[in-house]
Length: 385
Image (cartoon, rainbow, N blue to C red; front, side, top):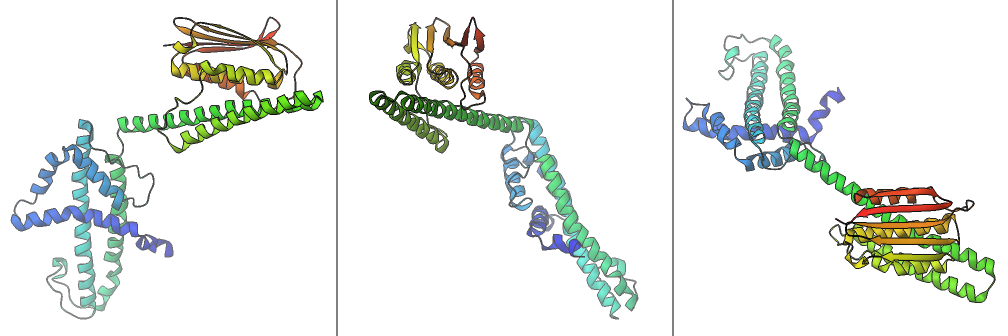
């Protein structure tokens, strides 16, 4: 019994009933004007539903009264963009008026029927409110019929509310174009999250790797001068990592913040110096103007080079590293090679190489990583267009 009465305790049941009553206000006004043509309001709804803004207004009403408090109501609040949207709006207006007529009639005649049944059961003569009972004779047995119109009223109030909500989701729901736009927006958000995750992995991972390698080398060297240089390198790398972290957090706080402050290949000297102070012997060859590389390509190229050097320090240690940066008319080539050595324990599960390949693929380029003629090679080609 409590489960049966639960819908009557929800505010949504009554906001949905109010939503069904609203169109009947217009019909009532028209019936005062000309009762002989009750079909006029339904006919007027056809041109009204073709107005694009009507769909938006109906969507706002439906969200407010049919699905109050729901985050994902499945009802659009955008104006009609296509003729299909307009026709769906016209159909919705007609269905809403029809269901509203049924709900209004139920809320008027069923309570009136209950009242008349109670009067007849108490011995009063039937009135003129309900024509079906005009010939009824007063008798207590009519009290047994009172629950029937009450149950019908319950079904009308609750059932019609559920029905009009389902129809609203069907006819006022997002169109195919709107669903596609929402999917594209969601995809952009996921891509942005992945990009930020790569940024944090590359910058913070590089800083921590340099700090670990420098600290280990300083402890093993036992040379005060070398220890001082190592601490200076750790401090510089840590400051750069903090700047990167602040920038990434700024992107998270401000979605429209520009990314032009990210480092580019023109600033690769700072990156190489950090790796050299960690013990790596780096020989860099540059051909072509780095300043001519487009900003997005240059920024991603910097991160690829950073991750490649981080992998060298993490897995190979202080070994000779050959870096080649070649800028031609249509592409950028980045190559990092180092001798293959026995595996050196270190953090990471290979996500760095995956990040390099992902960055290259996002720019329409390609990346090769793996052994090559006794060396470990990272070879990346990125289009400049």
